[in-house]
Image 1 (cartoon, helix red, strand yellow):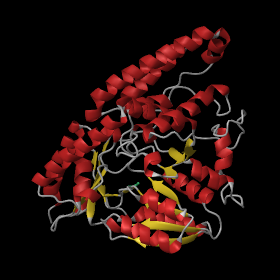
Image 2: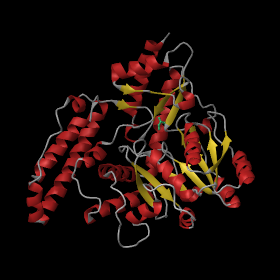
Image 3: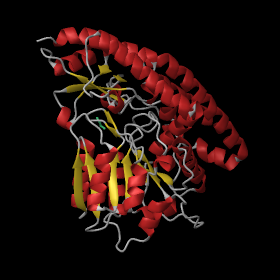
Image 4: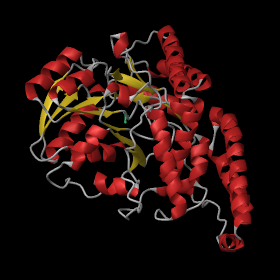
Length: 441
Ligand code: GLV
C-alpha cells in the first residue's frame, strides 16, 4: 500500500507541474517521490502493525470533477502566490498525522530551525503562524501592543496602511510617518518621528509590494535603541529573495509569507521574535486582544519555552506546514547568499529586457528598487489590463497590475523563489513584447 501512495504521489506531482517548469519539476518530483519511497519502506519495515493500519487507508485519486481538473497551469510572474516548488507541493500529499502526535513535533522543530537558518538568527523564537501574511500581521500587532500604546507606522504604500488599520481596530494609538509613493524612508525621517513620539514600537515594510520599494534598515536599530522602541518589520515579499538578517538589523518582530520567495503555499506564515520582543510580551499587563494568535499559547505549542509538554491550542494547517518545511529546506540547501544573488541576477536580466522594450521603472532611485517586486510604469497609449489579459490568454502567464495606490500606474513582476530562473524571465519578456502590441490603444 505504501508504494501505492508513493506511486500516486508521484503521479500527482507529474500532473501538477507544467510548461517551462515541467522538466525541472518532473526531475524534482521524481526525487521527492523517491524520498517518499525510502520513508515508506523504512516506516513499513519498522512496524508491521503500522503497516497493517496503513494498508487499510484507501489510495484515492484526486476527483475527476471539473472544478479540480479545469484549473489552468500558469506561470505566476506577479507578486505571489508564485509557483510552488514541486517538492513543497509533493510534501503536502504525503500523509496526514495529528498535530498533537509526537511524530509531528520534529517537523515543527524543523520549521523553527530552518527559519533560524534563513534568518541567520540565534533567537529561538521562530515559528509559522497558521494563516496568510495578514494573520501574522495581526498576531504581531495584537501581541506586541496594548490598549493606548503608541505605534509609529511608516506608510509608503498599502502595507503600512493595513498596519494602521489593524492597530486602530486593536485600540493602539497609531501615529504615522509618510513617504511619497515610490520612495523609501531616510534615517533622518525615522529619527525625527521616533524621537518626537517615543513609541513602544516602530513598524517598517522591508519590501512594499504595492510600489516595489525596498526599505534599507541600516541604522534603524540605533534609533530604536536610543528611544526604547521595538522594531517590527514586514518581509512578506522579501524573505528568501532579499538579504535580511534580523539580529544584525536589530529587528524585534518579523512576519513573512510562504507563497512568494519561499515558493511554498499560502497558509503558514514565518514569524520571528527577538529576546527583547519576548520580554515585552512577557511583561504585558493585559491579555492580547486575540485568542487565535496568542503568542504565549502558540509559543508553548512550538516549544519556545522548553516546558516539556505542548498544549493543544488550535488545529494548524498541517499540510501547509509540510510544504513550508520542505520549502525552507530547499532555500537553506541552496545557501542564502546564492539565493539572494540568483534573485539579483534575474532582476538584472528582467530590466535589461524591459529597457530594450522601452519600459521604465516606477521607482526612480535605484537604491529604492526592490529586487523581488518590479514595478513598471505603464506607458501612454497602452491599455494595461489588455496587456495582462493578452499574456494570460495567449501564454497562461500572469503579469500583475498595480495594487492599492498604484492600480492603473504600474505592472508588477515578481522575481520570486522557484520562479526566479532565466527561462521564466525570458518567457515574461517575450510575453511583454507580444502583449504590449496587443494593448496599444
Ligand atoms: C500581495 O501581497 C501583493 O503584493 O500583490
